[in-house]
Each structure stands twice: as C-alpha cells, then as structure tokens.
Amino acid sequence: MPTLFSRIINGELPGQIVWRDEVVAAFLSINPMGPGHTLVVPRAEVDHWIDADDELLAHMHRVGHRLGEAIHAVWSPPRVGVLIAGFEVPHLHLHVFPAWRMADLEISKAQQNPDPAELAKNAESLRRALREAGHGEFVPA
Image (tube, rainbow, N blue to C red; front, side, top):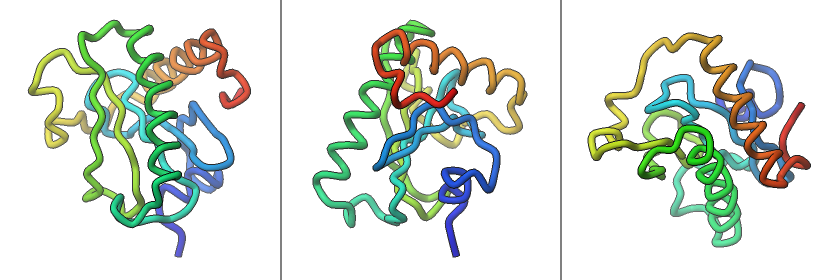
C-alpha cells in the first residue's frame, strides 16, 4: 500500500508541491514549524534514512539546500533548519524550515490545523523564489 507521501506525490491526495524532479518531490508540511516549512521526499518509498543510498541522500540534500535558499530569501530567518525524524510518516523525508531561535527546531511544537490559504500563499512565495533563482524547470505551475 502506498504511503501518504506517495499518494501526495502521485496526485491522489492534495499537497502544496513546490519542487518535482525524477528523484524527489517537495511540498509544504501540513503541520508547519514556520512559514514555508517544506518536506523533501524521495519518490522511492524508503522508510529509514540509513536505508537510503548515498546518491539519494545527496540529491535530497541538494534539493533541500535550494529550498533553504528560497526560504531564506522569502522570510529572512537567521537560520534555516534541516531535520530528519521519520516518526510521523514511514517514508523518508527531510524537513526544511525557517528558524529564528533554538525552540523552532522542536517538531513537537509544529502548528496544528494551519490556514489552507496561508499554506497556498507560502507555497506560491517559495515557487516564485525558486523560479527567480533559476530552478523553474523543477517548479510546478
């Protein structure tokens, strides 16, 4: 049975997708730790990050870096955090999110039930920043 993330990547469930390539897709978290909190998810259903091969992890990190640059450009946080936890959904994913203080790194403090209009606005801001940075080929319309 496909994971929740595979169903989002395949368009079976809604998601604010901001990046799509042959290896990964990236979409906004429905429980954001800040504006633009994005998940980088491999198309392959890998459960634990230690089971992923080096090439996949490197690609996820490169995409996460591009997203981090876009998050920084849009919201200007002093730091952009990166986290792999894997407890929420059994499908490897990299969290990329703005951080203004250490407490922002605590996933248990993620927002519950965010405004869908705010998520859509944040997704469009990220898509615009990614296009402006020259990554338009990976940004869905």
